[in-house]
Image (cartoon, rainbow, N blue to C red; front, side, top):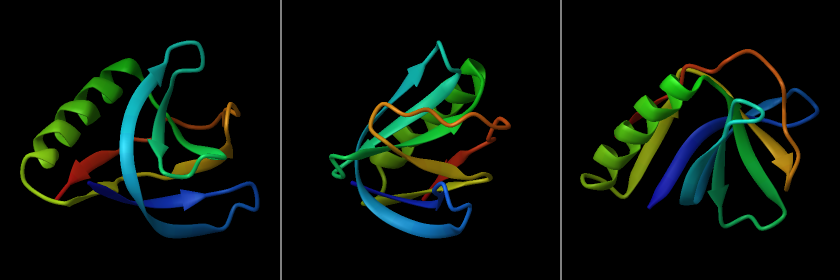
Length: 97
């Protein structure tokens, strides 16, 4: 399964990336969703509330049954080095096929 998302790194330039989706988890300490991909040296993070995260996970699970790729829309995902957290406004992401 693949994920297509608008990403931003520390240069603040945005770019669309397609990656192999390997999982998502919520970091309660930093109120951030952490998306894992095949890239072993960095994670993709999106600040959001736990409620937003639960909604997003349900959408991703639904998309997994229907398509080989899903799109994260409605916000920006921040590309960070492994273990790094990006602070910012909550992203209201949705997963669509």
